[in-house]
Figure 1 (spheres, rainbow, N blue to C red):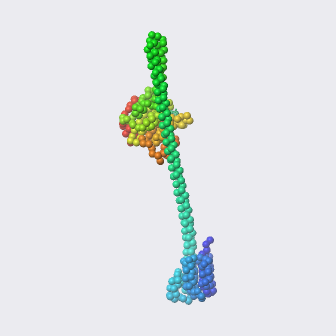
Figure 2 (figure 1 turned 90 degrees about the vertical axis):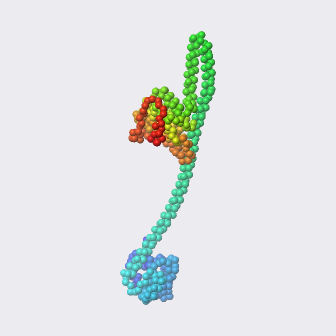
Figure 3 (figure 1 turned 30 degrees about the vertical axis):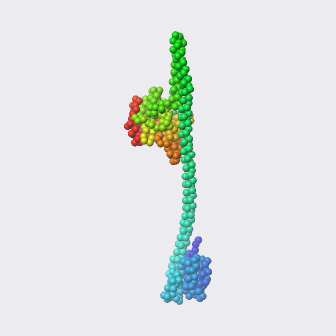
Length: 439
Ligand SMILES: Nc1ncnc2c1ncn2[C@@H]1O[C@H](COP(=O)(O)OP(=O)(O)OP(=O)(O)O)[C@@H](O)[C@H]1O
Ligand SMILES: [Mg+2]
């Protein structure tokens, strides 16, 4: 614990004792005495004093010289000095005392309480000063700690930035890889379709021509003729099946444009399943690149297949809209809705495939479903390729995120759109406008 010290300097031992007695009853500081200026200087070199009470007239080194020497040393340069004198009570000496840096100049006889109060003030000042010094040290230490912490933080931020950059890069690579795989798959499908068409198709055609010729020449043998007729029917149905396979592998109907392909697909679905379809599509030809057109077509195929296989629906609405920057498609049915935990079966790949296709094109998939009210698969695909960089992470997140099912939200908002109409209809510019406005 810090105990302030007070130095009393006087060559007269009676005065020293009197002063000392006056002050030592105070317990919160320690009194040290010196009989000469030289002894006082020795103490000052060893201790820090709250205040020094200095006699003016002393042999060899008087009070003024002692004060000068004390203040000339850096350690004691600012220690307060109070002159106490019985002999030099005139104004000239008093002035000299102040000139030597004294804070006070007292004459004897001294009123004890006044001296005690003055000393107490300096003792208190010394305590406060020490406190301030401690606080200053603490602040300096805090500052050092904060600077070090800031340095560490900056380092962490830098490291995190680098890690994020590396992650973005690998995610972008992953996205490109997925997109590349998708292209390869489609190319391979096209190649197989071409092979079937060119090899199997040509051979079947040649076979049909020969059999047709045989059929024409066997008119006089009714039994044989009808058998050959049966073979011809067989060949025709095989060719039909082959064309269906080719179309499945490579939707040749896409060559007629996306609008025509979608119309064909929807018509076919309605014919095959008997489920009523409303097609809502803009009048204008939707022109997009091959990648996007194929993706949209495949997504439509899978969504309709799901309606047929799982929804037990009687109606389906298909909306396709191209805005300035995006392609929107919505396939909504009025079926049973997706049962909880059914969406992610281990051997189900349809919805996952849709999600992957959409993600590789930088788009978004949103599935809204409500029990016994139906399901709506909503797809948004940007028309521009997403730039490398921050969007890489988005594409990856989209790919890794669970498929979003917004049943509760839709139910709460009560926005399930009624599935209107039963006939196959086409232009719906009104709907396009609504979608463009984000409705
Ligand atoms: N329109 C829908 N109505 C009701 N349930 C659906 C609908 N679409 C999907 N589901 C449910 O979600 C599940 C997952 O669909 P997904 O297309 O991923 O797989 P799948 O159709 O079962 O098999 P796959 O498509 O791989 O042949 C389905 O098994 C079905 O239970
Ligand atoms: Mg499926």
